[in-house]
Amino acid sequence: SGFNIASIITLRPEFEAMVGFTQAEVDQLLDEVYADYALDPTTRPEVDTVIKNHYNGYHFVNPQGEALYNSTILMYFLDHLTIHKEMPEYLTDLNLRTDLSWVRRLISAQVGDTEAFVSQLTSENRIAYDKNFLISKFNTTQFFQPGFYPISFFYLGMLTQQDNFFLCLPNLNIRQIFIEYFNELHQIDVSTRYSELMQAFVNQPNLEMLFAGYWREYTGQFPEAIFSKVNENFYRSTFFELCSRYLSKWFTWNVERSYPSGKSDLEFVGKYHEQFAGLRWVIEFKYYSNSDFRKLNTAIDAFALQPEDSVQIAGYVEGLRREYPEAQIAQFVIYCFGNQGFRVFAV
Image 1 (tube, rainbow, N blue to C red):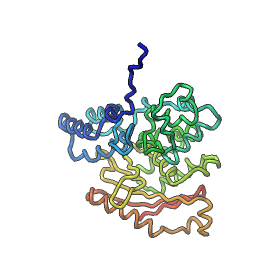
Image 2: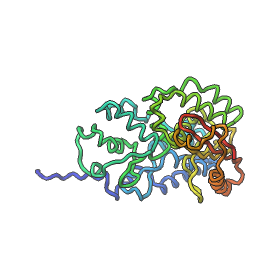
Image 3: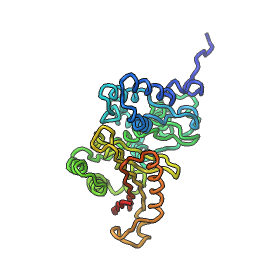
Image 4: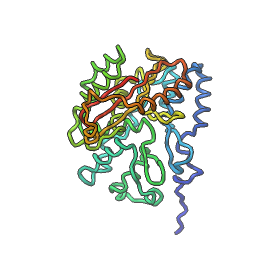
């Protein structure tokens, strides 16, 4: 026949829910898991939050529609939960990670393409795209062209639609993967110099000590050129990723958790089955570029906690206390000053 009788249904709204789990499906699945395996129902809110942060967030057709869960990695989580009655230490199945060599292969048309692409997503969590590419047929040649990179990663399941103009990283799972890419590209050591720092933190949790170690050992490896691209999100995301490498046995993390007064930057949450159960730290990040900091005409050690920042984080904590009145809550503001230094304030 000369007729084309095949239909591409990937981007048809009525089929979107076929490529992931909806919230209703996940709720029903967890209801059955908790009933069948006699799991403690008081742990359900924490489990719900963790899986939503790490596995939800996919919009394949309608950015304003319901976000979907990555069904494959969610089942990895639930498999561990049903067997061990606790959350897995590592929330990402690393066997499912797209290797950086594949990323390089996709975006190696020009020197620096890989670095620019990964750096953009590490610092901004989003990248512009041409929606016409998304809805039109394409060939293998287009797949490897710079203007098509965002679309390639959309079809790899690593980017999702934020709106009609930008694709974004859908969840913490994918954010961690892109920060790992960033570390590999810049040959940042995240494996051999942190054990004593993290052990000291587990022995006696101290956020200022932990962040000082991150600043000294992690950011101290950066070439000067990187600091022209950093921002508040970059410091927050890389600090979170480094902590998750070493402290996932005891903690999970919330990024941009919603409250009536806004979204918190970063939160440490003690796992319900470990020694820091009930602990919740709410952290607000603030960033001043080197030029903005010079305008303040002050030294870093003389910089004071800004009243508006104290009020901002207090609003988040008020909302958190209403949800978890028994939690051991602490609040902090971290100021990063270009590549000059930082201050940590317990509020």
